[in-house]
Length: 342
Image (cartoon, rainbow, N blue to C red; front, side):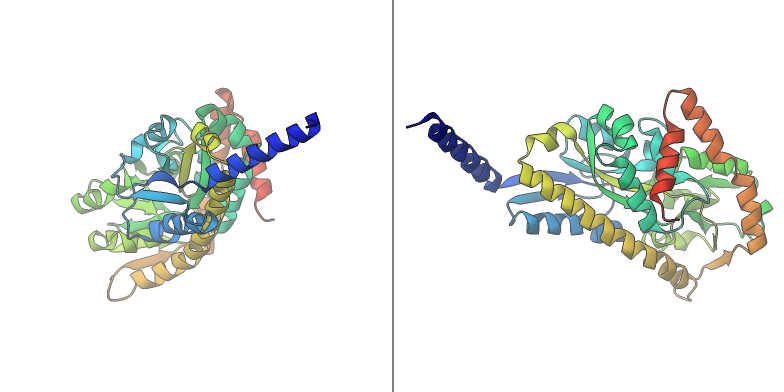
């Protein structure tokens, strides 16, 4: 047998072996801090799980652990990095002030309104080769599979009535952390850092005056039971819940499984953002019905301009601080803006 024939036969055997390996059943453990029945899970996580099963002919099985069953939300990044869990949905707000500062891009006020626009821009700067990949994900050894970005935050659950910008002064506001804390300071509020699961009790006890978040969460998590008011009409920034896997785990998987994970992630995030863009509007309407009993004020055009002026320097100060630490926030912001629709 000639050498070329031997080589061809050997390559054929290698390809057959890879195909056989890729067809073996693989089980991945997937955790989130969200409950199993909320829209974040139903419209995001479950879509990812179903699409992954379809793309792999059900050769990849997901063991799903909602509601912090696989670990606390503030431990999520470490759980992924050390391989204690294969996939965990990481709340960006818990790490934008520390390990992943460029996630603060999401928290910029008055920058973007559409959830899908923010989702696509975040993927553009976060995929391999992008600035977030190079400066944040690669050094941490993680890969983001799905970008679940939430609708723009407002004072969506408030115990105090707000109809003037000056009403925000002195209010204890639970916010997304990081850059969003700066926004609260500029508005004269008092930023309070608590986790999502702690919010309901904080509203009930009066530990916070208002929760800055999206309206679907107010409806779905039952925050409306402890508040009477909300405000809409000015984007205060937002946060995301990103499905992450360690890069070493990702690279250890067959190439066809890697491709399936990427495609399932894109499918899930597109489904999630399209749903949320619509549900934000619906939730605002729902919450003002007799069933929910909230009163939601919409900022006037003059008040929107006032808010824009007050918060105009927030992003610049954030950029300067990160640049001083050697983090390329200016380039990241420019690339993020460039990825948004004109």
